[in-house]
Structures are given as structure tokens and as C-alpha cells.
Length: 161
Image: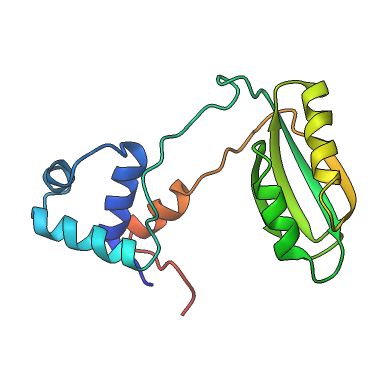
């Protein structure tokens, strides 16, 4: 889906203040309410806009340790392993990857001892053959989409043509 400048400005606005209503978005963007609603509907239908979850600080919730694990799994077991990983509460993300491992997992824990417990759960998943875990010391660049949205809002293309 190609995004235009108005899409970019709308998504930036909602990124900065996700609780804004359609009417307030329209006012701030200087367009009709129906235009904003139509854009939101189109962006949602296309899968660009998936929802408005709150941004949570996991450290403030007691999960101050973030770790990443590269998992090597038995061939043909990705779906089964992914489902089992999704059942572990502290597993926040799982990505199928190329390279050394098969899955890249982001997990959180309350302490080093708690991380050991989580790793033991991950290693205990049937089909997991080997893991390599690294603890994040800091997050110099947090997950972000703002630079891409700013590009769209400036009228620059979202994909190569």
C-alpha cells in the first residue's frame, strides 16, 4: 500500500497521541472528520494500522531485564515451537530468521535468577535444540517507526517503484 503525506501526518499524530479521537485528529490536520475516518478505515483494512495499544515500561512493571536468544530448532517444527514459546509469558517477541539460528526471541525477566528460569522454560520446549542468549545492557535505539512516518509525511515514497 502506498501512503501519502496525509496518511503520514495522521499516523505521526496518532503515534504521538494515540488517544486522540477522530474529530480532534481532523481539527489538528485541517481536514474533514469523514476524511480522517476514511483514512483510518483504509489503513486498518490494509493492515498498516493494527491498533492503539498503550506503550508500557516493562522495567517499571518489575521486568527490568531484557534478553535476546537465538534458537536452533528441529527442522519442520517452527510452528509447534513458536506456539510453545507464545505460551511463556515472559517471551515478548519471536521472529523466524535466516543465518545461524532459526528463531530470534526477545524475553524479559525480573532478575538474573528469573531469567534463568525463563531460559530453562525456553530450552525445555520440544524441538529446541540449542540456544544462545544475550542480555541487553541498554537500549540506545528503542523500537520506532517515526523516521519512516516522517518520510511519508514529507511526501517521500514508502517503497521502491
